[in-house]
Length: 92
Length: 92
Image: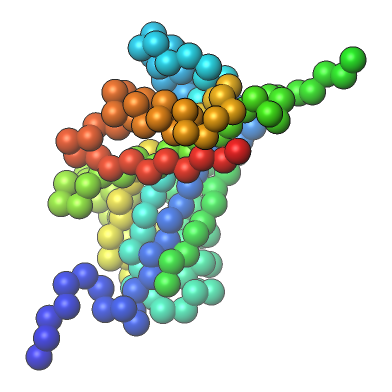
C-alpha cells in the first residue's frame, strides 16, 4: 500500500478565486499602497487596486458541481457582491 | 483634439500581482474561512489559503523595465518574502 501526500488526483480540484472591487468603488488600501510606493521612490504609478485571492482545495471530481459550489460560496460568504466582482478559475 | 479616458495605449501597462503564503506557513485567515464555509453547509473542502491580489497601472512602455520595477516593489514593500511568494503577470 502506498501513501500519497496531498489529495488523490482523481478526487481533488483546485479553485482559484480573485475578488476585486468594482470600478468606481473607492479603494483606500490601494491608495495607501500607492502613496507608500511613491514615497519609496517608485514613480510612474497611475493607480493601485488591491483585492483578495483565495485558493480552495475541493474534494470533488465534477467540474460543473465544483464551479456551482464555488460560485455559491462567493455569493454567500467570500465576496460582497454589492461592491466586489469575483472570478473563478478551476484547476483539475 | 480628442480626449481619451484612462491611459493612452502606448504609455501604459498593467501588472497583476498575486501574493501567497509559502507552503508550510500557517494561514489563520484561510482556516477561519474554511470553518465558516463548513458552518454554512459547504462540505468537501480540504483546504483554504488566502492571499493578496494587487493591480498596478504603470506609466511605462518597456516590459523589461516594468517587470524590474514591479519586482523591486514586491521585494521592498508588497510581499514579505520571508513567508510569502509573489507572482507577477504583465499585461501590455
